[in-house]
Each structure stands twice: as structure tokens, then as C-alpha cells.
Image (cartoon, rainbow, N blue to C red; front, side):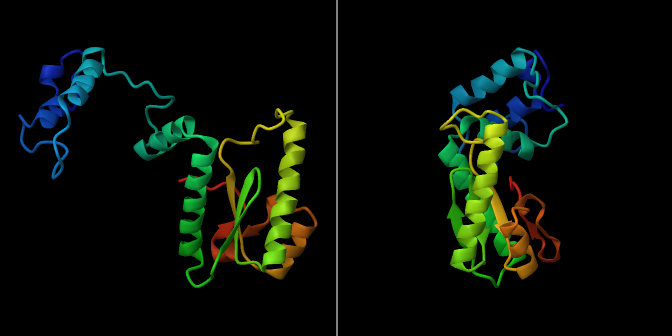
Length: 183
């Protein structure tokens, strides 16, 4: 068993961290400091209880949630822009993208500059309307960290954006859509 609740000395994870049970963790990296290992020992001695919201949740999702809770609005915006650019490159490797950021949104698009700005402005107006409807305090973002939105330059979908139908635009054919992207 990796962790034996209440018995850190018997815990495989502690033995691995100290290098007393086969290959030391982390492998091929410097050993953890004694005070860091002591934190693991204390956690195990206290029962090794999961203190998150869902023990079945993936480690990746748990790490993302911890990051989202501890990061600033600007840090999350940078993370989401990076993730959006990565998704854009996967879905549209031959299309050059541009980024438009508004107060609440990040728009990554291959639209011509004027249309990309129009889409960003329209989407921001919708976000402001939602903020008013939910009585979000003035000066506070609608969501911590700007949402990252992606769109392709397809005329019919651009007309829908101009009509204010931006929330339902979906570019399934190219594997991207408008919406929040978290990873």
C-alpha cells in the first residue's frame, strides 16, 4: 500500500521518498528535502485523508482546480490563452491565429482583424449583460481568469456572431468552437 494511514514508517510512499524501498522517488531527480518528506509523514500520521471535493477526481483535474483557486485573474488569463493557442494549433495547424482580449474574454481566431474585433466586442457585450443579470459587482470579472474562446472564419458563423448568437456558434467541422477552454 502506498500510504498506511497513521503509520508513516510503514508507508511505501515514505520509503520510496527516502530511498529505503527500491528506487527512490522522484526518479532521476534530486531527492526531496527532509522538511518536504516530513510533511508527507505528518499527512500520513494524521490519517492521510483526502481533503478535496471528490476523491474519484483525476489528479490532472485536481491540480487544475487547485491552480484556478490559487492563481490571480491575470495568471489564469495567461494559462487559458496558452491552452487556447495550443488547441488552435492542434485544430488549425496551417492557420495563423490572432488573439483579442477583452475584460472577460480571450478570442483566438483567424478572422480578419475587423471581424475578430467585432466578434470580441459582441461577445464582451453579452458577457456584460450576463454580469448585470447575475449582479456581478462592478469591476469584478464575470469569471476568474478570462474565458478563452475560439472561432474560425466561416461566413455563415460570422453572420450568427453579428446577430448576437455567439453562444451557440459551433465549429464542429474544424474541431473547435466558442466556449470556455480549460486544461
